[in-house]
Length: 286
Image 1 (tube, rainbow, N blue to C red):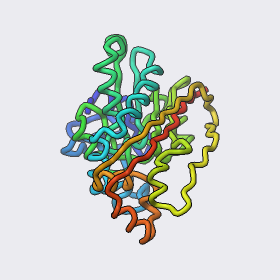
Image 2: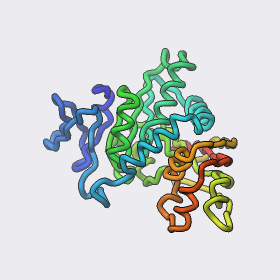
Image 3: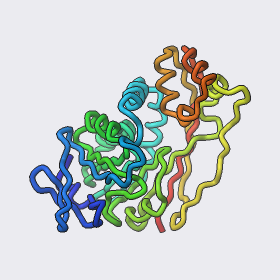
Image 4: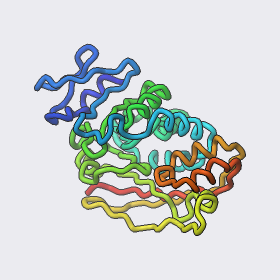
């Protein structure tokens, strides 16, 4: 966690004033204070922003997600996502926010891509990385993955981020409040939205459902934004380990809607071949 970067970005979730670091806390001028966790992140999620005691994905789900992503199944997708983001980097200082960052895999991959493959960018620009997620377990794992990225426990529906401070927002399958995304972005800032393509995980659907259907693609528009670029990523993956299949399922919305029959099918699946299909849309704030 980089103090200088955080002090210009973090917003008190109670009174909306800027937070400044004082010893092991962040404090606003109204004396609302928030401790820096021993792991290195800061928790800016208020009790009234929680719908459960521990909102978001659990520790067990995060472990499964981390293990699955570390196996490289989403490597090709993350490469393309990083490529799209990097093509939109400009300016002397660039603040990048992953809104709904999970355990930090995609933000970490982006940082690695920039520093390993794009030295000119880091020579000409200061890149600051921020990740927000409502799950404390997710942010704990994210901080373990990369301690130099600024990770925050917070809500996408009340982002603990100051207005007009972010240059690029990544919304990768995460629910969010459109007005909040617009609020924190600078003028001409970029919003990068990832959604499932019509055939995403169709091989998995064929196992789980009697009559599987393709995703219904809907045109997404955001008030105050214009669409400036689209990209599509499609490729097959082959999984030969039942535990990996289980971890993949836990990453999907299907996990939350399983009936007993579907759970039985899922638990008995030791191999899976399926298409991954992603749409990446880039919007500019106007």
